[in-house]
Image 1 (tube, rainbow, N blue to C red):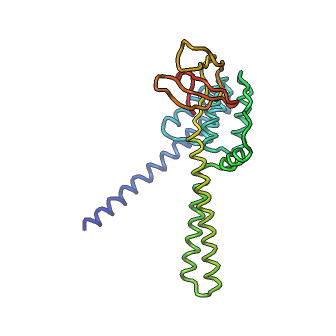
Image 2: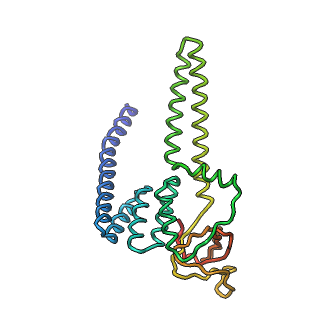
Image 3: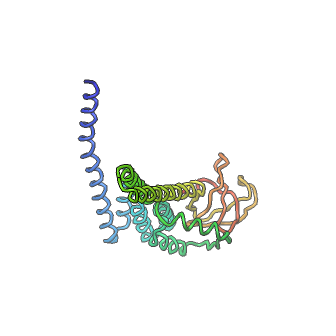
Length: 258
């Protein structure tokens, strides 16, 4: 009796929760379309506020960050634009429009930093794992696994020897592809977790040779520059590295992590 009551309770909760989730999704979509209309009408500050309200409600997507970046770009706030473009890039690293806008916004910044040469295999692997979004890869892995499971069930119930052989080896192929897809998705997530980056928000920053004010300046950066974050000394300083390999220390308040 208790088991049946528990089942009824879960069914009731599900019936109550689904409409709430659908309503929330529809509400966020309406807000997103409203923000897009504000952007299309050239009301960039109002569009920025509307996009940020959606983010404040806990909703995130590559399209949302991309459109917010576009609004900041049109409003002349380049560091904010780059920050949101980079966040969109992490959710959809293979998106050509996002990558183009990152290059476009970077061309508007003061610092022009050439990337240090990268070993061709490392460059190839990075490009390979960043071709598709991790969410899309996860969905693909689930679909491949379901197909593999269906083929395995077919193998168990098939009578003809040739059909059983085909179903069995086909299922192995689909399971193998699913595992490969999961590995690629996990590699992408690991790449972004191990490559923390930030955007400089202070107009002019003296990057120090060590985490202290009264030491020599290694080089100067300007707002909009992307830096790689190597560590935090716990005292308000970040160790950073530029794309060209130069390293130094910067105050945490001068940057915002992506």
